[in-house]
Image (cartoon, rainbow, N blue to C red; front, side, top):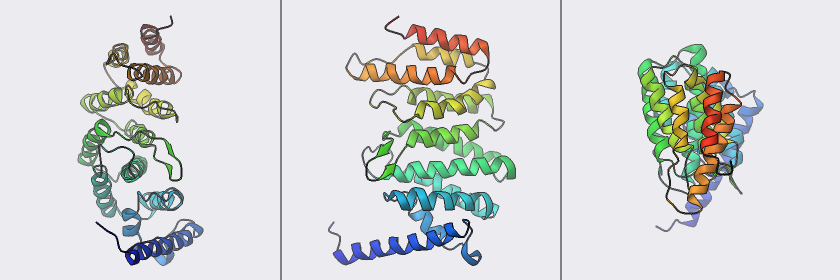
Length: 274
């Protein structure tokens, strides 16, 4: 479909006007001007704009501050529904701009979970929905780029790791922990993208907390010794490298000696140079 030049110019003008409004809010200590929250809809609509200044430096911190300090509980619930819906937009694509919508929606879900620790804004049903949608999203996310030249951070896995971090602070059931760990394991062993932007470190932070409360922590760590193989290069090498990096990140964050030893043993089992 051909986009008329006038429509493009109007879109650019709308974005420029939005930037100016958001800059004013940022200069107002991130507080809404005269209590006006109407720009919230614009922020949600542009949450994944490929313009990294708009997306990362204006919308992200302002919306995050509002979720923590300005919005009433019912409005937070409505925003959560929008964010969860955003996780499905373009899911499965790779190399397109839809990753920014998914990734930065995930980042705001992390903010909601962080706020929930103090304010208890979410119900148990909300938490289960977040876990279900998160697991479906993480299993199907195929765009694992970190920094995108000219557009800034995509960082889908790092932002997902932030959600794991704050979920791990909650009292989760064994089934919920198992559900999270299963999808995390598979994602940290992918064979089509090397994690080069500290994704393993970010994910290990939340995983350590989950393992503290999981009955089968040793079994889960040991399961990484069975590497999926395609008998193809470089796929199998990428899987091995990603797995080793994650286990090493995990090892240095674990405090329990038994789990550290299991992690070391697992690393030894997949060390081709030993």
